[in-house]
Amino acid sequence: MARTLEPLRQFFRDCRDAVTFRDLRAASASYYETTHVVMASYMHYPPVGARDFDGQIRVGEFGYPEDWRETYLKEQLHLCDPLARRAVNFTRPYFWSESSQLPNLTPEESDYLQRVAAQNLGEGIGIPLFGPAGRNGYAALGFGRRKIPSTDEVLELQAASQMGHLVYCRLLLRELPDGTNLSAREREILRWVARGRTNSQIAEVLHLSRNTVETYIRRCFEKLDVNDRVSAALRGIALGMVD
Image 1 (tube, rainbow, N blue to C red):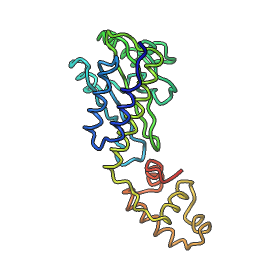
Image 2: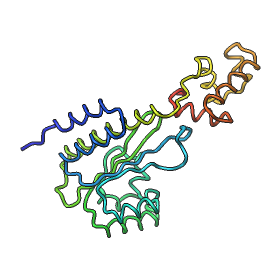
Image 3: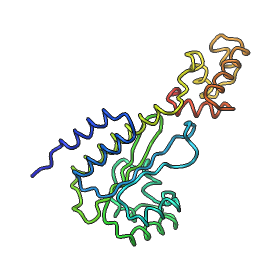
Image 4: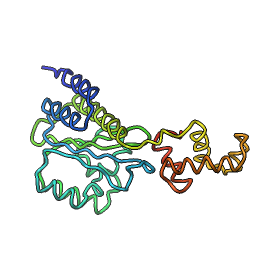
């Protein structure tokens, strides 16, 4: 019997109604119960310049053996997981068994794959996830010894993972200071700063005095909590205020 799409539709409805991270986790758990998935992990990559960017990758997971989970987190093995490291360069999900065929594997990546193989986790897929203003992510879904999903089922899991990522972004961005208190003029000047224009050039383009431009830029720095033009531009891009 062909698989119905109703579980996916219900997951989308639950995502639409989610107002907390707990809601999203509950929706994901309910959906996974209808699939082949027995273990899952999610990595969130804050873009450079975002207020929550600190060089760290957020990792959430369930279903993995406890000893492997502790090792993965303690040793930060996502830094040598070839699928996680290269996810944003992919355009499709990759089966875990395809990892060894990736080009130019580093010694650290090869060692990681050997350690994973020793865990006997079974088959799974890695899914690249894309969000607003470069806020990307990666989902790893393991099937253990269950039946490997069909191509259509993999596409369904990809759609669900992408939806979950976008909802996570929505909930997260709601909690972060977003800098939207910049005035229209401040945003306009920030866009020129991001294009590499000097204060004098901005003043000429906007028919303002140089002192006025400098005042606006200082206000942008204060509101964005940055100290230099490059950081201001990166934060503006991360917040979607700069194209």
